[in-house]
Length: 233
Image 1 (cartoon, rainbow, N blue to C red):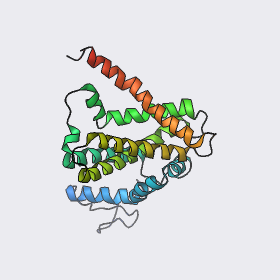
Image 2 (tube, rainbow, N blue to C red; image 1 turned 45 degrees about the vertical axis):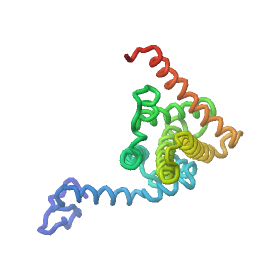
Image 3 (cartoon, helix red, strand yellow; image 1 turned 90 degrees about the horizontal axis):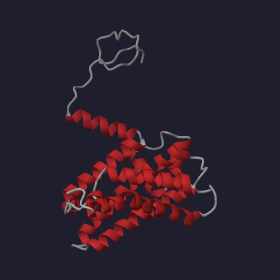
Image 4 (cartoon, rainbow, N blue to C red; image 1 turned 90 degrees about the vertical axis):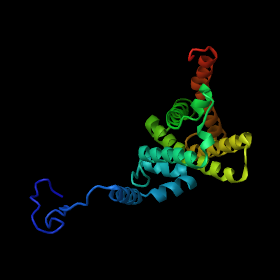
């Protein structure tokens, strides 16, 4: 398609450059169709299934050589978090309510806290456990965004499943949620850094857990201290 084309012809498409001369009006149907078609062409199904099976391998390929193998990280995590909020509001309404506790509000915050968690975890991975890794800091951040999006979908799927079998067992739900989230993250980190240094699974487990501890020390503990001091009253 050329910017200098005069777009001659009476048909729908220009015979010179192929431009659509009679585009469909923008309405709900058009927007939905374009969204589905574009996401399908970018491989959303491959991204969704592939990141469950080989997260570290596919993310590494995306960063190093093939930018078309996965849906871009920012749109993917935006859709994952939006889907998480929508499904919880529809099927798990109790999970979005709090007693106005600062800690509870942070734990249930649907956007800022997941992104902050991914950022802190990426810093811990890059500067402490995998210094000098070929992915670099920004590659590590991209990896954590993909893993966060996939872990979010995995956890909400587990929550919906538990809704069918666990009536009101918050402790059991929290343990399962934690197991799924941390387990998948460790699995993805181990795959992503396979072949880079020693440590294997032990190193990956330590790195992910330390990332969670850093989040507690840097965010949750200050929030608890602020709440206890009554600075928010």
